[in-house]
Image 1: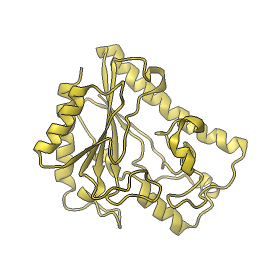
Image 2 (image 1 turned 90 degrees about the vertical axis):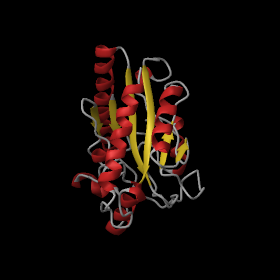
Image 3 (image 1 turned 180 degrees about the horizontal axis):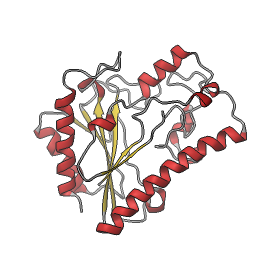
Image 4 (image 1 turned 30 degrees about the vertical axis):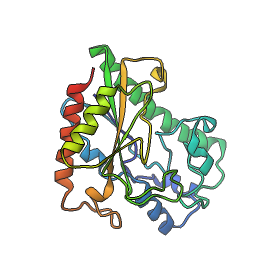
Length: 247
């Protein structure tokens, strides 16, 4: 099993800060809204390989397609390199070719690590399950496609080629049996696969698991709440069930 954790970090190295044409206050607000805080602590399983992006998605979003024409979120200025905030305001000034190349290098380095982790599992077992690990805000963000509320406790995201039905059934039933309500491809959808295998290699399975942040943290302060350890235990139990159900 490979745990892909792309959005847990708030780190923006100082040399990149001048690219962001917003005040510190706006930057803090955007980090609060967009960071999947603590997912690197929630999604832990013995023997699984974790691929964690060490920088904020406001620097570069490794979950997006590199090509804006292929990435739906580029329409709202949130492709691989964000140009706009969640409220549609300008986030980033125009970049030089060198600056854009530096950001692309960070993206490429992450996906090289991700690809290598998946390939190592394939070499060993001839099959691999990717768990795409996220959290989401309890209230829709301004640019979110889905405005429906209330939002579920957990969201399961699928890929039509790479997500076997038994994996979906396992995840949904495990969570529902524990008392949680579950959205399937709602409020977010999809599941990541490295491009060399994308819609071509059925040995690679993938599922996205998103946890509603209200379950484990204070969304206003960013601090863990009293239920954090109980939610972490539940997430790890889910990972165990998924590993047992994997090909």
